[in-house]
Length: 116
Image (cartoon, rainbow, N blue to C red; front, side, top):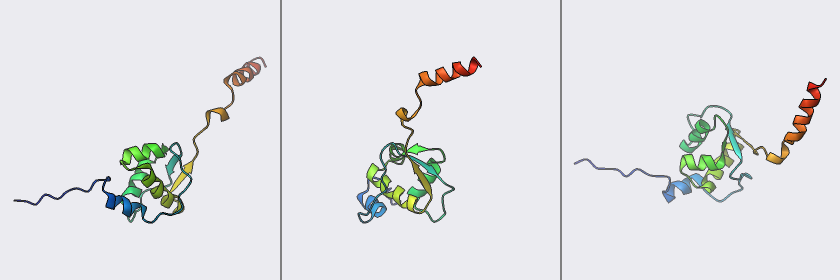
């Protein structure tokens, strides 16, 4: 009778400890910070780092990464802090709605240009 091996899941506390290691300084990331990969995953990268690079070919928020990878937010921030230090990904703040020009101002400019 074959021996069935238990597959280790992300909820496994030992695996989470290996990913996070000792408590150290973390990058200032929040749930809506957008992450973008800078290249292809390295053959020597951890599986979680490779997954981040593959997922972030287009910008994804840290919350989305956490959900897609089935890892807690705190673990994802540790992985991303290491990746930011290694220059594998970029982190950028999302576009704040109030930073965009008012629609009525844009319409007024457009109408003014049309009258020229």
